Length: 169
Image: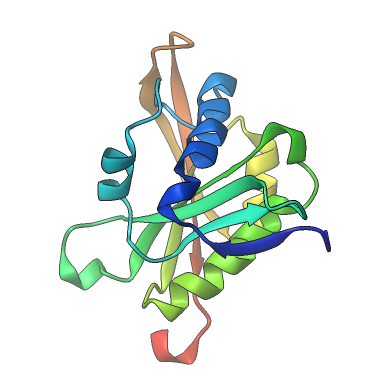
């Protein structure tokens, strides 16, 4: 893990980010999406802050994490949904944990007190990762969405991580 570093995502990282996202779509374990959005679509749907990439010792992007507003009302401005994707060649090697831990710190610096995660309930490795990083499962939403690629309904677990920073308590 000493060979992995976390840094702020830049727009020029988009091709690598999009390629990793495409792997997540193809694997049917991470998203209902059927195709990668354009950078402009993706950029508009996420906070401008708290965008992170993991890179290997050669500077190659091997994972990313980002947050999006969970609600439009100002009272919920400190609640965000986290998304994380790790290149298939680097999964189960601690990259996801590094990204989630860095995201907790970065998002709190930007006023986020609660991170939410929506994870397919059969994606056991992702559920275990989030729980290892302090997320608590609040419940499972049954048949939340129809997966057109798999032609079946999917259940989605809702997890959250509440900041322990005193300024948010």
